[in-house]
Image (cartoon, rainbow, N blue to C red):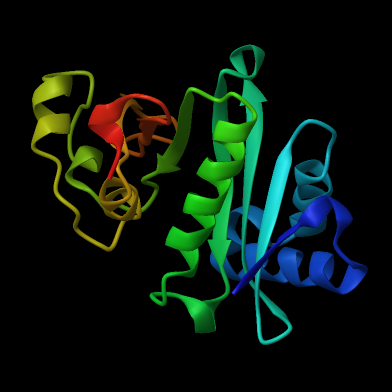
Length: 182
């Protein structure tokens, strides 16, 4: 697998990136995937593609925040035929490596639960919030468990962010503290 910067990638890869977004998140990017790819390419942002067999297998992006000491991972998407083959994990590792080089201390992301994929979508998340986070269970292959395997921890939630009972789960990882090193 080869990693490329999407900011300098050929047009065909950018078209493939839009298709991967539409495929991975049809409810978000069905009509605006190309616009999202253009936003990923903006100055100071970081956008990486994973290429296998001459095709784009996945993409990952990051947005600088907090004077560039913390970056938001957004988005991560893997082409359907390459899922569960380590492409997403490899993209995250490559992104983290490049962000460390830029002086990033913390990487974080929001991972929506819009379809009842976790127990955090059950009931009122404003009540017993920390207990519910501590006892979270994955009901439908929510990606938070992938991020946990990569050293990320749930650092908060935004209840009802996507509608009643549809929270945004915030995960983060230190790129410099030893307790998060794998």
